[in-house]
Length: 199
Image (cartoon, rainbow, N blue to C red; front, side, top):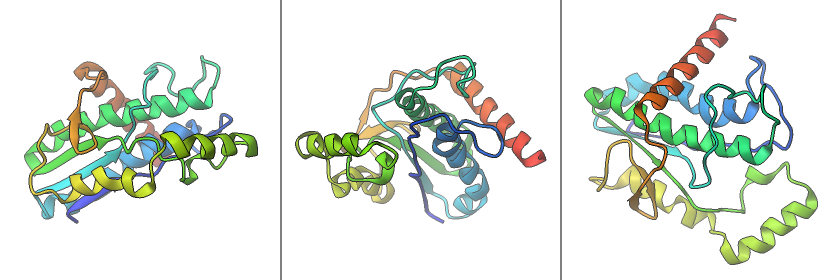
């Protein structure tokens, strides 16, 4: 296995919990990527140099490491999605640090706004119509959204930092760099996965 692209994602209109009691947007967008990556590390290491690409977003922020599950805050679909995308970017840097000795590079990226996907499947009919209409002006095609993913996966040498955040084939500044918080988020994910596997 030469490349792993973690691209699964949802946005939920209402707060839902998975079977382990974890808020569904975080469970799929963050823990799903984290767990799949852990399962495939040995295969990626055997193929080294190999790469992991995490599809994140510029539409990110608001991560509360003390309330990932929205137990203390009012649930909001946009906020839950944004916190999951911040987590993707932060975990990318922690993965990059942990896998450097295994000859595996890790990158996160933003595809831009791609309205023609199933990400908005839970939106109302009216909201879907608005998204489609506005997307004609400001949105991107699926092909254009995937362009940087393909480039990160196939370019002989990525001109940028291992653990970096990319858009339109170049590294972008990331405002969420914080080694202490990245490690704390990693530990939270590990604890949630360990609890799940024990049940």
